[in-house]
Length: 176
Image (tube, rainbow, N blue to C red; front, top):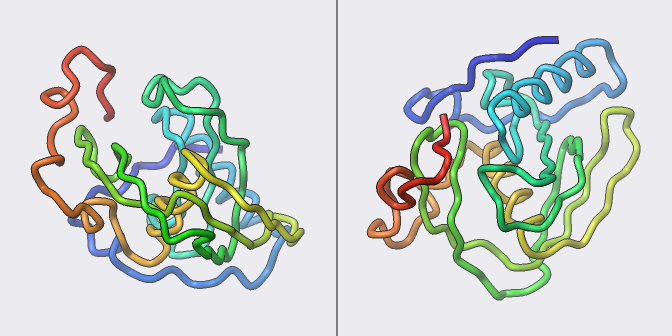
């Protein structure tokens, strides 16, 4: 469909709590998901939440397969997740680098639960129920934070580990 502009940190719409999707398998939802997919692919992202393109609905997509922005992570299956509910499966937290299309050119060390369970629905209203760990767990937590108006810098505990990608990782491909 279309590549949409990604809202940047500072835009008040990124701080709002997204509304639940009430109707599945609609023309509007199909178009939204296609726009999100096209935008994520064009920006070489690992995921995208509807609020990042200005749509205040609980819709996230994510998936990674040999992504140049994340060269050393395991594959994450492409997923459309609507009205998600996340639950930690452990109290253990892991810190790792994160970036975001809404915080371009920057990275930070973010603590996340190492294992989570998530439930929700796909675009057709079919139930999704998964237990995940590693990068998959990190990506789903990051994207679902967007639905609560949370950007990853809000989760950083040590701002000495937050900065511009080009300074932190010289020579790596920069995020837009």
